[in-house]
Image 1 (cartoon, rainbow, N blue to C red):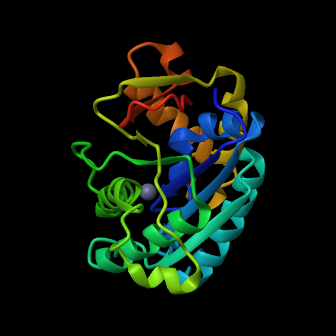
Image 2: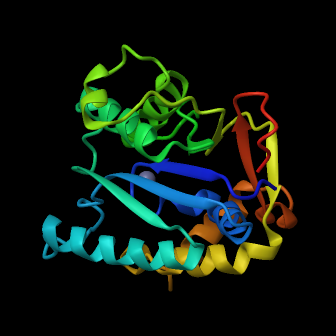
Length: 231
Ligand SMILES: [Zn+2]
């Protein structure tokens, strides 16, 4: 596992990081700086018509802060888009992700695999496509040259890992941090629905997806480059 590096996790919603929570906990334990970008406010994440989007936004921001503390994430950057609107705002989402990359200067970007089949949520696809492209092109001087006026230089991201993938080529054993992953998921209290906690709900889904019970301790990724930056 890498040490003393900067890792930028880019997701659509507060709670998406659960899919790689065990890896994040391992990274922060190994003295890597982990920063998370959350593109939306999670403001439609309720089935209760009496809870307004601004109320659920406040709740989810507090829950995300608790999760970040548990996982050892040093900073959460909110891009502020409305839930479910990333696709229609893709131009603006892209500029913001390029900008964060140039500010944070990560060694590794982790995001959604946008090519995963059957995911009905366009936010997941959109943030995946944007992250892959931004990590690849943020070193280009003529992409958003106006960033220079704010003191932000082009930045080359050496490695990108995609979770939520149909075609993994890399797996991390997260047995040692699985309890941290579960605790961090549980902090998303508003997302538990009919389950006792969000962590329980996630675990139930995970068990249905794996062939063998012990596979719940494996977090799978698509590693895009051939760098030696191994998670
Ligand atoms: Zn999501």
